[in-house]
Structure formats: structure tokens, C-alpha cells
Length: 334
Image (cartoon, rainbow, N blue to C red; front, top):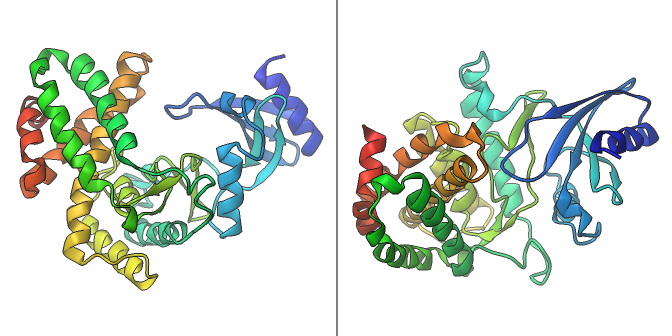
């Protein structure tokens, strides 16, 4: 049977007779999404191959859905699951992404909306749990950060940008990446992070934020998700608003006793983390473009690279890596 047939059976069993199934453009993962319309309304069906190899007790999406729901995080409600066919049936919270408010009549709401989103982020970062269970058992350790740096080297420098990059510089650049990763491994400051907290993973439903795509949550610096939101590959915020929201996040962390850094320390780690996070994003975009032949992300490469100079210019720890990457950054500026 096809995925659509399986969705029809699941939807009919829990809602009503299915009227139509429309595929929705997904993200860079192997998951597939469908909007399912029936007599009583619409729902979202998700087919995830990873669910086939899991049980409901160890499938990250369901583990995180349960955890976030218990802590009143606004996420789509779970209507039904079909473990046999690796399907989830979820509440339909519309298709207005945070990204899409820009350039629309809602753009003026951005400052208020972003502060609400940071309030939700603080709720997420306040969640604690057993260290031997996901998501608290996984973190942005040195191995994970270097995996992402190496992914960038393989798919961005040695593939997408290979004509413009001197491959003899790889070893020296990787040494710099090792040092940068070491700076960011500070378990004493770790909190729970969504891990992809950007404008394509936040819906605006009834004028309120709804968080999606949270199954990869893990422990890391509180700046990680703040970077994803404020130095977003898909939306470039007004610089004044960005600075205001950094301080807003910092103050909220302090209020909730989630932070022992000074503001200067917070901003220092924000810049180093932003460098790593943006590098990681460029690696993903180049992989999707070259390996997966998915051109959806190609136009996000240059805007993401354009952020790097900001961090390199103010943090001496990034200077050498910036010099090695100069040809890429110069091309982006041009």
C-alpha cells in the first residue's frame, strides 16, 4: 500500500472519511508531510522512516512531544499514531511560518512575536530531566560539534566551493575548528535546546507561536537556540532588534536562574556559537544542493555566510579561521 492509502486508513479510523490528501513541502530530512482534509476539518500526517525502526517509547519525536506537552510548550497536538506504517497524525496549525510574516501585513508584529518566542525558549531551556534519557543524555559535545564542522568541510569546501577554496588549507582550518569546538563545550552552562529553533520551525497560529520539528532536542549552551532564531539563515532581522533580543534572552535566563554568565560572557559565547551554527547550516545547504540535488536551500548559502564576518571581526579566536575562509567570504560580499 502507498503512504496515502495508509494515511486514509489512519485518518478514517480517528476522524472521518478522508476527502483529500495533499503533500506538503518538508525540510531537509527524510520525513514526508501531508495535509489531510476530512468532513470535520484538516490534520497533518507525517511519515517518518525512522519511526519504523523505533518503538513509541524510544522514538525521539514522541519522547519530546510528551516532554514538551507536560511543560505546556505550544506544539501541535498528537491525534493518533500508526506504528506499523510509521505514521503520525497531528493537529493542523496552519501553514503561516514565522519566516512568512516578513514582507506581509503582519511584519509590524515581529518585535512582540519574537519576545513571545524567546519566552517559550526560556520555558524549553528550563526543562530538566534524567541525564540517562533523551534528550538530556545527548549534547553538543566536542564530537558532535566537530562532526558538523567536518560536514561543512566535506560538502561546502571540498564540493560546492571547491573551485574557490585551497584544499591544502583544510588541515589548518580543521585545527582552528577543533579549538573553536573546545570553547563551546561548557557543560556547566548547558540547558535543553530545541536544536533547530529558526523561522521555518515556528508557526504563527491564531497570532501565537507554535513550535514544530523538535525531535532533535539536546543539551547545549543556551546561546545555541538564540543564535538559530536571531542569526537565522532564512530571515535577517533588523540589527537593533537583534541586539535588543539578545539582551532580552540574557535577562530572562538570569531571571529563571539558568545562567551564571555576565552579559559580556553571554555575548562572547553567542558570537562563537553563531559562527559554529552558521557554518553547520552552510554545510547542510551545500549537501542538499550538491548531493541531494535539492535546490531549495541554495539561495540561503550566501546570506548565512554573510553573517560570519561579523563574528570574525570581533572575536580574536575566529580570526585565523576567517583568514582561511577569506575567499568564500569575499565572494559573498561581492
